[in-house]
Amino acid sequence: MAWPDTRLIELFGIEIPIVQAPMANSTGVELAIEVAKAGGLGSLPCASLKPDKIREDVATFRVLPGKPVHLNFFCHRVARDNPEKDRAWLEQLSPYFAELGVEPPPLPLPTGHPPFGEETCQVVEDLRPDIVSFHFGLPPEPLLARVKKIGCTILCSATSLREAKHLLDRGVDVIIAQGAEAGGHRGTFLETDVTTQVGTFALVRGVCEFADVPVIAAGGIADGRAIAAAFALGASAAQIGTAYLQCPEAYTPPLHRAALADPGRVTAITNVLTGRPARGVMNRLMREQGPMNDAAPSFPRARPAIAPLRSKAEAEGSGDFSPLWSGQAAKLPPFMGAAELTRILAEDAQR
Image 1 (tube, one colour):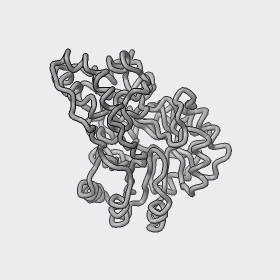
Image 2: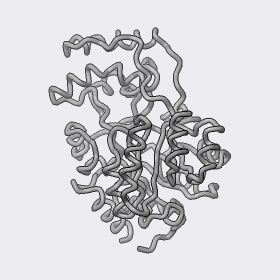
Image 3: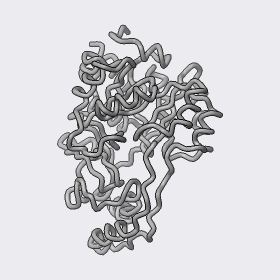
Image 4: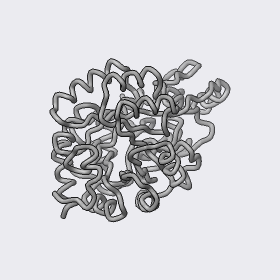
């Protein structure tokens, strides 16, 4: 296939300029392998994995000869403890706990997996992946320098021109321009107001006008026409997320799959599910407590705050308290394997 921009094909050593979004907890090595087999860039989401699991997944992926290894990590700032705020949030949710007949979680709320740090940096140095990408900004300069030193290509998400310029100043090799349409967590690290976030194609065009590095378009892209549009505006590749959640290799639970299959689904950016803005299918908690609510605990404490509600509701067949992440693409591809989907998207974009 002939593509109008082959910089990322050559840089990554791939055949198709399609990047599988590294969706933590929703995808893993199985999906990455299938995308890589088709010629795209498979991604291993490592944000919620322990070092031994990262090593195991990389070993599994490397059974494929000549395919680039791409590891993705979160670089969020660890929020300060705020027990008063967390207690107040649980009190605000108390009617739901009473309705479902479950106990609220004990305080303090757990902080979840830490951001990219010394331990994960050591894993990267040991494994020497071809590509490392970061979400929620970049790690501290000493850690970033160590990743660069071993020859990894560095990718990072930007949700605004200001964030993209910051990444260029830090020496990032590729910018992922994540527009407002994207499903899941915003990659914001300088911006704080999601109501001002730029749409994918406006952001891609703006970043490509000044960036001297390749740009990956991300957000609301689920068919060939959207991929072609991204290239027309200067992108060198497209990142696909939500479309892959319907593939059999994804870990997407049935409730989530059903929500994605609904052609009339409505999505919104919310912080009440995890504590950080993320786009998902509208559910009861989002409608009644958000979508955005300053009272929600800081990321990621809002997730364990609703865990008992989510568990009980899901057992009863309800997604009222579940993170049903989804981008804004109006129509998703039909159910098929990830390798086939990657090839079809590429062929459709070529047409």
